[in-house]
Length: 497
Ligand SMILES: Nc1ncnc2c1ncn2[C@@H]1O[C@H](COP(=O)(O)OP(=O)(O)O)[C@@H](O)[C@H]1O
Ligand SMILES: Cc1ncc(COP(=O)(O)OP(=O)(O)O)c(N)n1
Image 1: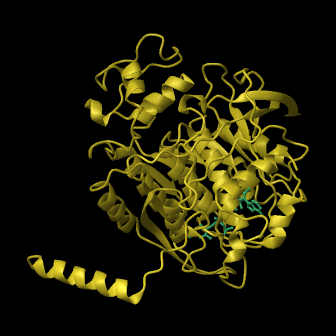
Image 2 (image 1 turned 135 degrees about the vertical axis):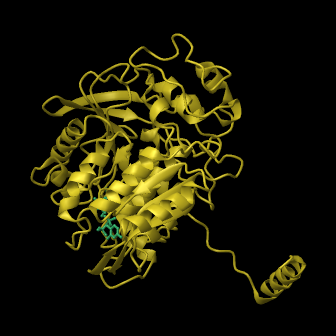
Image 3 (image 1 turned 30 degrees about the vertical axis):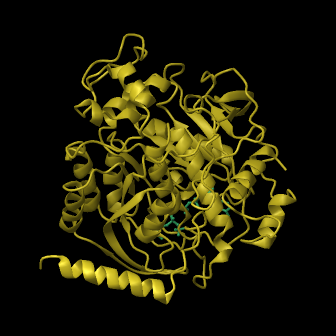
């Protein structure tokens, strides 16, 4: 079994998956434990692999990654508190490098995983802007389940009502731009939004509406973004006691003008951003992340072949993608091909080349998470995270990180892309950087696919199991229910009408 498979296996074990009993899917469990799912064997040797552009050197010191346990938040098995010290979690250890295509070198990098830190019980507030699927496998219902399972508080704005099931799409009713605008405003007028996942947008007008909302809303007005406790030292180190102070000399390399962060008042300081900038030596994120962390799944065509974005809306989509308002775009292979105007990639290497070209095309304003679900010729399901923002201090080239994964033999892949992008958006506020969030999202979706056979939903391509890492609902018997109801009624009676 390759180390990459071992990592996924460990992630599943950490989440409560029982390989001996083969609880979710005996055949799948066997494939894992006996090493039959071996797509990554020739491509990775560390606990995670990265592809780095030539001069993007990874930190050199090496700590063994063997046995490192990717943490997946789980109510049943809380993430271990013995994880690596926080400040170390970014520091990948280069193990080996190889060239996959012109100018791109694969480097195997160990990216230790730590548990998302729950901030005193507070959950990041994550808004999904997406279409519907009444079967709950894809779209906004799937987003709600994913966000909840990944530790967020889920909110949703509906862009399009879609009649679909696990087999086909039978009708699409895009909402008016005004309807979407009112929904967006209703949320952002009242709630601090920490992260946004964008799915089906449907029409040019809706894209423009979301674009304008992201651009013009003052997201810090309601008291700033969610932050984890315990980071105060980093903020003061970088931005001083006032959130508007400039970085201390030397704290951030001079590769861009340091700009004040948006929040005022020490308690509202956006700790994440300062922390991010300090580590990566970039100022980009300080200035842009006054907005919520934003992930877009550029859903254009459903797997069943139906257009979910009108053809004339593609120009507006490109404008949004190049606006600097989007942090990560998560295309599947057909979407990636459409965005770069090329045939669909047939190998992982081609997909990476296309992802890098897409990033170039978008002016480097975003990050590209390339999804491998449609890779027909291979049993690898490794994804790639291509980032032109990190490591700028060392190299101007984008860093391409391989997120290991192997094919799971199941037809239950309806809505995988929706779930992955929601998981990414939800993990980001709980992680140190996008890369760590990407690793967690990949581990989570792998678990959700691996556990999908526990469900029995629909006659076609069934959904993934969004609640795979959650404990069973606590059974409540009739007597308990009776007592709760009595208490509620007494409470209500006391409320003024
Ligand atoms: N059969 C599978 N086995 C393992 N991982 C899969 C499988 N199908 C999809 N994935 C993973 O699910 C995620 C979503 O990918 P993809 O299916 O390409 O997206 P979309 O649903 O947008 O088409 C990716 O991480 C991909 O690698
Ligand atoms: C309302 C809605 N949004 C998105 C999709 C596409 O879902 P995706 O996760 O890309 O997966 P497939 O089901 O198309 O494989 C959808 N169908 N509906």
